[in-house]
Image (tube, rainbow, N blue to C red; front, side, top):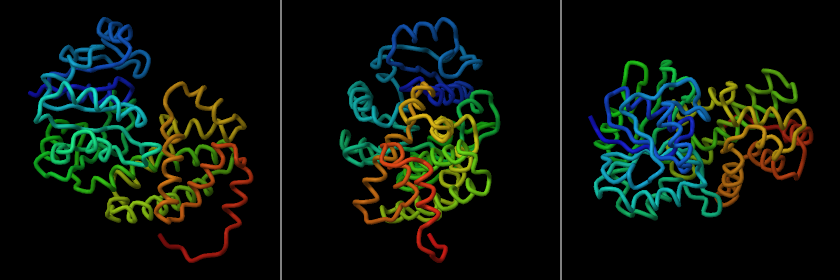
Length: 333
């Protein structure tokens, strides 16, 4: 049994907390809203983000970040990517020097264009060997219901990766080890952009052929950027690449896809995100990925058109026309 602090009580953080608690770990979940924390502690359920999933007795809820972090042997971060820097910095000020950090957030920081592991390393320079990323095709709603799920745990340190693998591994939640942190982070972040595009396509009624093409060519441009930034090409054929892309582009559990559907049906990006009612990571990630692609000299036509749509520079119909009318080419990554 380990003491684990879960920083962030959205649907994903709550679902992962239930996995950890199911293995007998002593889990403390922190969330910013102290009133909501009290309600969760009393009701034993996250009615706002993961309704219907009861919280085990070995899960404690708190609105005090120090309480969640100070005695933890591992800290699991599940906060919006654009909030990660501030939350991580404050939390680590309370943490033990040898604490293992597990990041479940998926995104790229706007402005700096840094992956979240790079943000963590700026704040805690010696964190790399104690830092792991958990990612893969894993909707919180299904994990919370103990439906079979498989993910990858990536770290540059094999001992850390194995430790985190063991923390989570159950008969319903299988974890594989990966050493390609760059590829796992980029796959998890960038697939949200393609899921937004897949939703737009669905909302416009374009059918399965269009979505399959979007997913396939979307994966190609994700891999292009990833390889340019130091990722391994094989990573994008695994759970955190094509696996996560499939589930996010095809499921109504996906906030990114649902947001895209609303945009495809004619709502503005703001109207769509307001209707979803939770953070839609693809909005910020598209802006960051667009900047990374330009800085790296990598061609990402789908990402570019989605960037233009969500920033009001073009509409979905015109974006599709432009993509379909691009010059003839050989198929390649």
